[in-house]
Image (cartoon, rainbow, N blue to C red; front, side, top):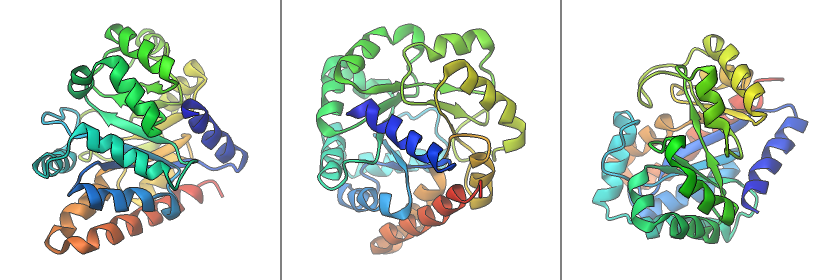
Length: 272
């Protein structure tokens, strides 16, 4: 069902003339149980697709916010097996919301491609984004994910030229993730008008929905992106709520879900 779940969600929103709201959280931040409470509450807050980060000690594409989230998760002792268990628990009550795992190659290599792909499928994970996996070296992982019916989702950036784009879209399923700013997450702000043509180019070349992330922190920016893309991703703004709630940890779940609700509403109403 994995790839089909992603396709179905985008088809539903397209019929409603809505862009999708995609949220990112780090598994195990600030601990496994708190992240699970956030995870299971996101769909009711209006989140259409969830990106669940798995912690890694050297998250090179991330800004300070996500780096600190990974550090908190690792300090809490989060293991990759617990990330898969979070997904399994989520699927006990939600069979519809696409769940995308996002992270780096090292944990994937440690498990082996087939083992990682099968674990994704068994846990109800629909897709995988591996930030540091170039397409030229991804055939083994692609083969394993295809066999498990899990989408390998690739990143395009402002520096991706036409030739490179053709390489990126091969064997990509579900959607293309367009990185809207050069640099790391959560630092620069997206200029929706400035990327509109690039988003259209990626969509035309791939035939897949284009999801825009990096540089979206406010409802206003999320709405602007929603008007030009199939989805807007927010991560750092949600993860920041966890950091701010650490002195009073019981408030973390409420704060994250409240922020997600406001952002989701902005995205869903952007085309009205």
